[in-house]
Length: 218
Image 1: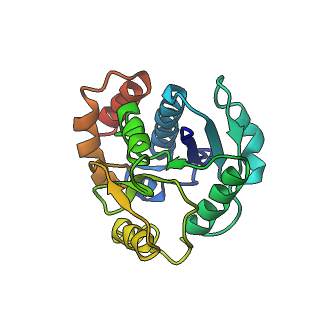
Image 2: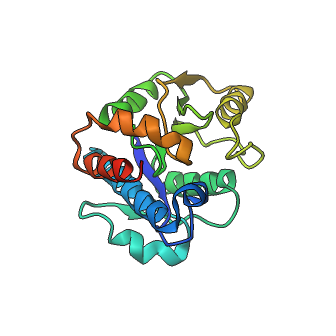
Image 3: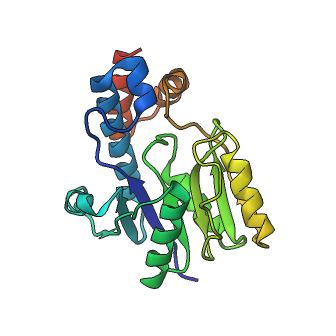
């Protein structure tokens, strides 16, 4: 069975765009710095991934930017318009059309992820149709499938019920689901204390830089 492809959903950090809840609490400039540091953590994971890699920037206008993010080989597959579910379905279809049968998705807001988590997800797909790694806020930090995803557009994206709804959606389409251990992501100021504690012992370079930034903005 072919190894899965890792797809990194990301957006280009810009002042005043994205991480709005962090910006309201910390200010636009600190929120931008944290967004950039989070992206670097996701790219650190991408560099460590031993298999095929796809970078999925937020829109086609960011394709050239995405092409310059990494020195290692990667395909750029821009996201189309739509809600997150629609964009996931579209990118998933494009990646499968390129010949990949098993697809893992991560974003750029979960510095808790490790290569071990990604490899555990790969192993889980040997026995299950779907693998999900829940986030403490009710979302997910990783999602993977050996089959095309069902229609994800109606799901409650950005709501605390998302993870449960995603799992139920998969099961209602007769998909077996494996849940990995839960972890945190960073979306708002209330996420920062737990992130600072968790990152204090993480020696990966991008995580060290993120930790220093979170301490500075404590």
